[in-house]
Length: 620
Image 1: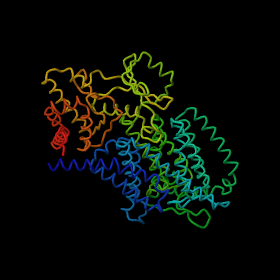
Image 2: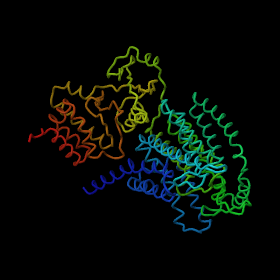
Image 3: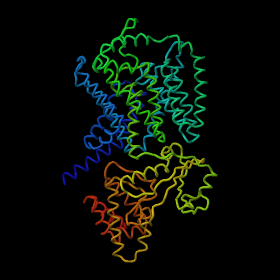
Image 4: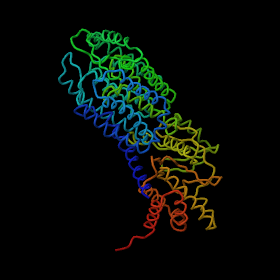
């Protein structure tokens, strides 16, 4: 009894971390620098709301590490981190060794937390990124307004919040400029472009205002990558806009671009290369310090190149996994570019690679602006790749479907379900089904995650769990904003139809008992099917149960809580026939089947819920 109670508590803690704490922490990691007074508070928020909760979640459920350890990106980063820590053996020991372990640990926990976030809250990820980008957009607009009021020739935009350096500020402005550029290239609705194009322009103006040149090169690289990874008619427009904006920037800001020369980059790189030559294979050690004076009277603490930084600290042997995980991330993103989030994340990574050519150098650090150039994009790509392979994310491309195409596809089709706006479910001439979903408002979850795509993802995920579902054939996007899923139906009849056709009470009782066992299996596997009723459960030809109409479904990390089971039960009690068969005539059989898999407390809770619903309210 104590073991079951502990398991239930640990499940609830794990669920709360995965479903609520990690999304909050990730959101603040992305945008909190825009409004916090300093970086130290940003570090504390990341540690308290993302890093430490991830560590607790992994301690509660160590098996979550299995998929992480099969991801090439994470394995390469793990090797890189281990080699960096080993380099402490031959590096200087100016700081306590224990303190040197913290930044690598938090970096690895970023990857683990992103994996848990994508696995269990993939539905919230796109709205989360969009909301963080909106916060960055509003803050940047304020920064630009205040900068314009006090501008004098030669001034460089820094911004507010935790920003204290124009070059570091440009990393975040460029990061979110790359996001809005990705949204412009991938969004399916015209209204979203009305927001994304001006937003991109504002973030680009902020990059220009910082006077930093490297982000301009990085954004050019990101735009080139983006134009090819999602090649369409917008790619031509993007390439044209790049040429025009490049020419405009050159004409209007040529003096600003060239007046600072190379900012001593060549001298710094030459001096760093001389130091690298002293220990080319092993490096100077992760704990080594760097101080370079190119003749300006003060020391630079970084080599102003991530690649040179890796070579300096961990040598050629450390550079190999460092190059590998970036190359593999881009390759993986290209192969799986059907996933829009991978397009966004890979664009961020290309931007970071471009910015890292002449900036940075600290290989592993606490959360700061440099994380936006490497670790944040890489963690998201690794998490998406893992879950894409596990088929928890969309794997089918969404095809455009014109009005003529829809008419041709649905010719001689039988209307199975319709509403005031027209047909909703069609049985096509070949026996397959086409289910239509009406357009949602642009700011709703149905816009970020269309219900047709939810149907496809849920269907595949349940099939991976051993639950029969319809086989999705195609996904379509219609010109009016609607979406559609084309699927092959499961062979069988609804449980409601089968029960209606049974005249022998004993046979019906046995079927209800089997359904109770099936419902308990769903609940124990964390499947919360909001629309669960006897019309959405099929009895297949082999006697097994299957599910249909899957758009309104969610898979939780742990067995469903008692509250969710009650909510699921209340939905079924709304149907008069279902209520009579399940909760009145054959309640004992339902409970007996449910008890095969579920705990006694869950069975008792279900029993109380049914009795409360069956007891008429007393008139006072």
